[in-house]
Image 1 (cartoon, rainbow, N blue to C red):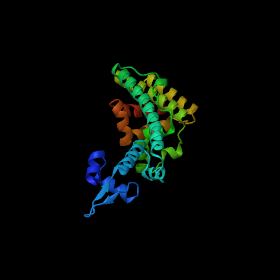
Image 2 (spheres, rainbow, N blue to C red; image 1 turned 90 degrees about the vertical axis):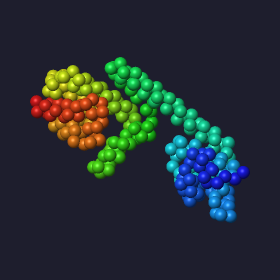
Image 3 (cartoon, rainbow, N blue to C red; image 1 turned 45 degrees about the horizontal axis):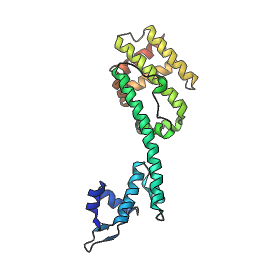
Image 4 (spheres, rainbow, N blue to C red; image 1 turned 45 degrees about the vertical axis):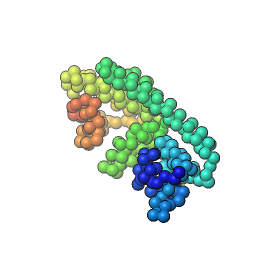
Length: 248
């Protein structure tokens, strides 16, 4: 029984517009047309659409999906490969969900997770690229700065830096909640330790450089919002603390 584009759309959840696009680029051709010119799809086309959607779920771009399906490769082989890829993603997502749930549980208790547990599941460069996508896009579009081109991702190093950032930001946010002054000894010691970590990891900043960085975070909507989402007033507190540290 042949299906019209509308019927295929209702059956698969793929929009009519997308089906038309797949036809235009040669990814999914109809089996024929009616006398009125309506596209028709049979079982082989529905099976091919299923394969396309599995690859789309795995974030394969359309041109690559077309290449993978060229020459009508054996269907069972395609499905076997897609099953393997989806199971790998399922395993990664389960680890990430476990990390997220543990983080939420710690947050509800007002506790911080151990640093080594914060990034369970972030094991590949691609995962860090996805996690940083919004920040990378913002910097490139707003300032013409390609963060990943200037600082290529090293997964082990990124995990270490992220763990330090969480430790430092949590500690500074806690000082703010406690009402500790921005120029207190505790704040100065936290900044000193943070700058020492950065220097040890090849990102040495002078106190003046760090103060300038914090001013940038305060003045940039994207970064200020990130800090304020963690703790109201944190962007302002960090900037004032960094200025006081640089002036000491």
